[in-house]
Amino acid sequence: MFKKGKQTIGIALGGGGTRGAAHIGVLQGLHRGGIRFDRVVGTSAGAVVGAMYAATMDPEWIEQRFKDFLVSENFKNLGTDRMVKDRDPHSPMSQIAKRVRDQFVLIMSLNKTFILKKERLKNAFSFLLPVKTFEELKISLQVTATDIQTGEYQIYSSGDLLEAVVQSGSIPGYTEPTYSGDKIIVDGGVGLPNPVSILKPLVDFTIAVDVKRTIVPDLADLNIYEILQRSELIGSTKFLDHLLKEADFVIRPNTMNIHWSQFNYFNKLLENGRKSAEESLSALEKKISKHKYLYYRLKQWFVRRNNSVTF
Image 1 (tube, helix red, strand yellow):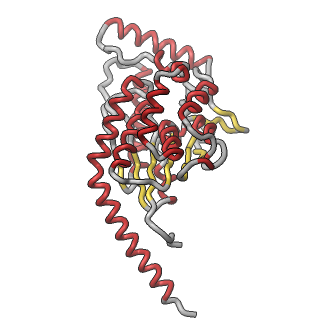
Image 2 (cartoon, one colour):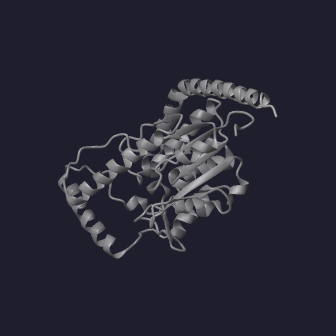
Image 3 (cartoon, rainbow, N blue to C red):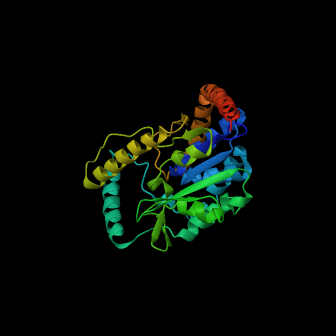
């Protein structure tokens, strides 16, 4: 059945940890350009930003709230500053530190299922979200998570918003998973790095924001750990590119080679997201207008077809 009313627009926000800051910049750029959304679908970092936007429809507020969060105790309790990164891979001390890290990760992985308790992530997201249920949102929102037992994705659209966002953002191996019956629920990005396929049947025009790493360096220190990491990255990147083909329009901010835990790059990622939206605005408006015209013509055809039916 052809839908009545105006053309609806939705946006799909993918995962990426701190690279999700680019989502905020994109929303700011589109909002300033007059683009409004009827629905948001988010996974992982995209679920957090998407929930904040669906609750307020105010990207400027989201930016300020995140900046307040980054200097709060709730953020410090996440422990992302203890991740080994941003070192010069060619210095002797950095190479030693990296080898120690690799050995530590291997030992930890054999004895533990997570590093960060779920309650700490819940406290952090509670600070960020201005409402606690889906029913309090101003526009429709879907949040995705993944059952790591089966690989099937979970979709949440009603009830406890905070719990849904926490499950969507529970990075496997880092954050404590959620146990629900036979299900072990982790980050939505595992099953759907960008949830555009969930959004597609729900709106007339789909916009996807791709915040995967835009620069992937050469492998400098070849070992088993790095080979496995790179293999996983290649597979997930190819899968994401395949998913994004379903979108009517894709915005790709420059996220450089930023690791998901490098929150000191928040401002730069925000700026890059805003810039990518501003640069895409003209092409996006033309695409929406063209799509709207085709939508209108199809609607006219559908009405005429129905009116011509006789009994």
